[in-house]
Image (cartoon, rainbow, N blue to C red):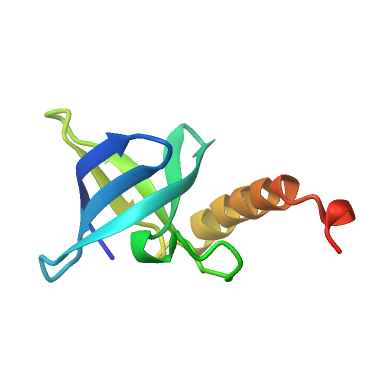
Length: 106
């Protein structure tokens, strides 16, 4: 998913982004978390169709927000930079671990 564009972002209980893939097809993604790392903003997202699957495991994608010289925002994949990807994935994994209280689950 290189060079995905953030076309539409709605602020509600959940944030839904319309992302355009490399083939020009648009897909809805739900933002499940956001973090900062080395001065950049990163988003963890899942396909919006999976957002109603609370008890199911769903892999998330990590996208980095870039702003060009005209102020245009875009979201890009960081899969090709292993060090950056691993560092940001660790941040999100730690964040998600904190959100789940395993002591209260049976």
